[in-house]
Image 1 (spheres, rainbow, N blue to C red):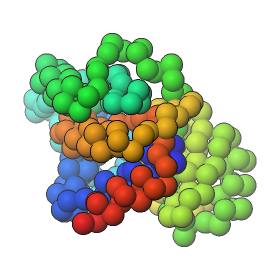
Image 2: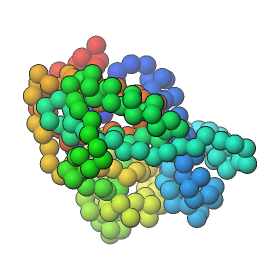
Image 3: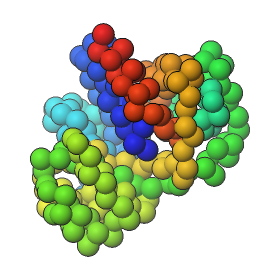
Length: 253
């Protein structure tokens, strides 16, 4: 997971940040819409919506945007129906990849995802192809300045978390998937706005990526992340510090 977290930071430095922010807001809006359709517009009785709103606020999505997304999804007018789909396959070097999408056109999204796997030397399989290499968990991330390592560790463990990792810029709290909404609310009450709260696919082992495969892998994962219908991408890779440093310097260039 460490390599994947660092890779996310590398990708964030690439390209125009306004464009990335707009794309991220669109994905958050889509998740809010699906949450409302599934459980109603009252956040008090809809845990998925509460968690989506927490994440949206943590990523600085304006409250007006959140309110409009909820109102639109709850409205009587005909609206787009999004389908949740999970894709699984292998990237170059044998790295296992899970892609989660929300789409209004399964054929379009499947074709896009399959094309990107193929373009960068990977292969898309059926559901179940790589899921056994991951564990379904909940994850809450908080900015480092929100709490000390000791405080976040004590509060998270007391509330039922399974793992707490403190990195340079943020704390990551992992819990059972069924405890995500409860733990997110507890941590928000204790420390203020969180950065993200979401269900994740946590790798149970990592594949060490050779430097010669690193560029193809990172380009494929970034291209998948940029797909309009793709919500999240998970992979079980790790990289040497030298390879990460090279990718980081190229991303800043």
